[in-house]
Image (cartoon, rainbow, N blue to C red; front, top):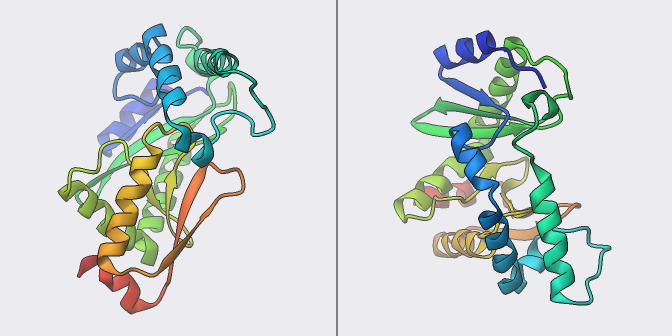
Amino acid sequence: MILKQQTIDALKSMGINARWYPEQTFEEFQARMTEEKIKEDCEWYKDHGFVRELKPYYDSNIKFETVSEMEAYVKEKAGSSVDYKMRSTNYTDLFITYEAENATRTFIKKNCGKYCGVHLEDVLKWVEKDRKKYSGVYGKFTDAMNKLLKERGYDHCLSVYPTTYGIGILVYYNWSAETDVKKVESIMAEKGIEYYNEFSDARWVYRFKVSKKAENLARINA
């Protein structure tokens, strides 16, 4: 993906940060891709059986006979998933962050196209679409949920975002998935919110399908 510097600068003047790596700085991105981090991921994965059920890091059709086989696979995938020595034009995912309604929001625009140009108009269109998501019923519900999570110190690394059914928690390659789900469940129970859970088809997202009744949605602010 090709993102010209003049496009990046123009977006920044509007309070929008667009980049092809997920961290705030390229140096942070490089640091994440160290052997130590990959080793840490392998150890964490080994010790959290719940995560293997909640969010399969590997293809669910692959079966491991031993822990060492699993470790080798995780290390290979983690080490090859992103190579920071590659040129930025090799990447197809764009990370976009903007300020809105006293909140900092980040979303990922996937598959922008290898070697394809991403223009200012494209990013502005994607940001506007994201803004509309949060202006709807479930968007406001998600904002209220995130506010509660922040007040209770639960907001670090917890991906809660609006959907057409309620809220979703990204669980694929999310090492804190078990804790994240429990935190949201505890607030739902405390507020008496009606919902049920299901996985997305690919099991990347754990869904909280919230009743759209006005009195039910209002309970999040009670």
